[in-house]
Image (cartoon, rainbow, N blue to C red; front, side, top):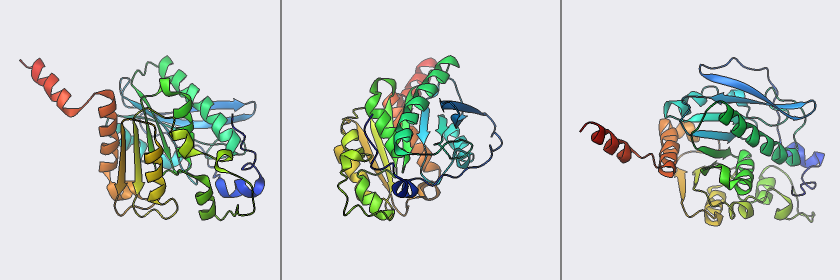
Length: 276
């Protein structure tokens, strides 16, 4: 585990994490909740939106200021395009307990990843597994994609960042007089350079918090031979789905279909052969 101690001080953590605790919301149709223990007395709440045992699944790490419950209207839209969505929280968010830190965010991510794989296997969900991270969650998704390439089929990043220090300045942190370097931070650009699985990066053209240039840098550093980069005109940091609508989910499904070999023309050919 890398040393994130320079980020794990109160004055920095107060700018990185904005935990919002809430009661467990009612389950949407077809969803289930899973509580995963991180350590004695600390557990993280997850919500799985399930459509089919053979469908691909996305393990999703959301952005800051969000919770699992915020995706109750969004999860079913992934289901509509034939994808299972596995939402996870962070310590202190939603109905999870504990206090968030950068160190535990990454270590918890590994435990959540292993718990998701175990749960899928035990419950006969056999589809390909993809990692997805939005904004802050991009750090978790990239970290896991680098560490566990054999367990995933691909990586999806929405509104992600390449370098920590420019983002820190946007969040009001001044590291001018500090000796901190990127290698002691999230280090997304260096990590994604080791990710060789197919990668899809989406970003809003009008994102002022994390400019599209950050996504371009992730794309350029990515070690994947198969990678796609989509900038959504008119979208800012929090409005990709609102601007793109259902095309957002269709684009993600199209990427996953390419990776898994389940393209529309293959389906048409199979259907045609079956009807002969």
